[in-house]
Image 1 (cartoon, rainbow, N blue to C red):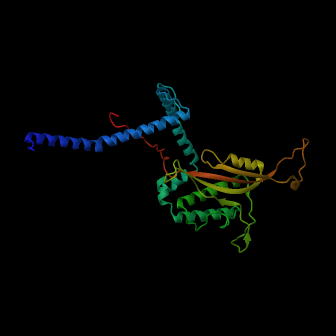
Image 2 (image 1 turned 90 degrees about the vertical axis):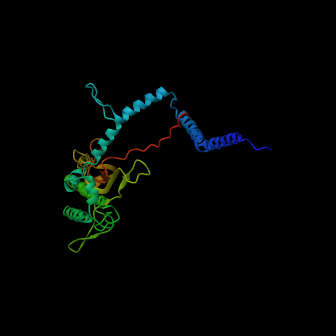
Image 3 (image 1 turned 90 degrees about the horizontal axis):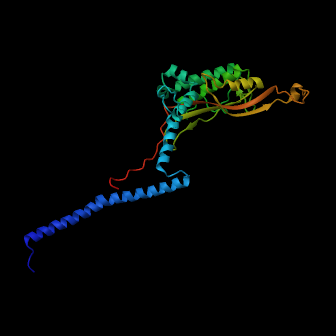
Length: 316
C-alpha cells in the first residue's frame, strides 16, 4: 500500500484535530449548558405546577399587576404632586419595633451612648451593682425575693450580661408601676428567706422568666428582637389594677401584658351583700400577670433572604 501524499496526511490531521476539538467543545461547553437548560426547564415546570395549584393566574400582565400592588403595600407610596402618600408595611413594622423598644432606650443612650456600646461594654460590675440596688429598693418597698424562685441572682453567669441588666430593669419598672397604683405583691409561702435582722420572711411572688428571642429565618445567627418577661402576683382593688394595666404603655414606656389570671376575694370575707338586682360588687382581687419589655440587639432587623434562581444561558 502506497503511503499517503503529504497533502492528504495534513488534511487527515486537520480533520482529526477538528473532531477532537468538537468533542472537547461538546463535553466542556455545550453539554454543561444543555444540562443547565434541562435543569431550568425542570424548575420551570415545577414552578408552573405550584402556580396552578396555588390558584394564581398564569397571565403575565395580571401577575405584574399583582406584583406592583403588593410592592406598593410593602414599600408604601411617596408624596407626589402635593398628594399625601402612605407608609408601607416595612416602614410601619419599623415604627412598631421602635415603639415596643422605647422603654429603656433613654437609659441605654444616657449611660452607654448607643446600643452597640451597650452590647459591648455592659459588664459584670454593672449587673452586680444594678442587681444590688434593685434588691435593696425592693426590700424598701416590702418586696422580698428568693434566690430559689426569682430566676436570677447576684451570681448568675449563664446569660449575656446586657440581658441580665435588661431583666433587672424590667423588674424594677413593673414593681414601681404596681406600687404607684397601690398594688401589693402577694407572698409566696413555699419557702421563707432570711432577713438582715436574722429572722425569716416570706418572699414575694415575683419571678424572672427566660428570655424569648425572635428571628425571621431559622438559620439567623442573631435575633432581631428580644423579649424579657416577668411574672408577678399582685393584690388590690379592681380599679387600681385596671389603672395599672392601662399605664403599662404610654409615651415613654411599653410593657406588654401577655398573660393574666384574676381571682376575686370571697364576698363573705368583707360581709358583702347582693344589691337589689342580686349582683355582688367586686372589691379586692389577686391577679397573676406576665409582662414583658423588648429590646433590639441591632439598629435594624435582618432582611428576608430569598433564594434566587439562576438565569438561562444566552441563546437558550
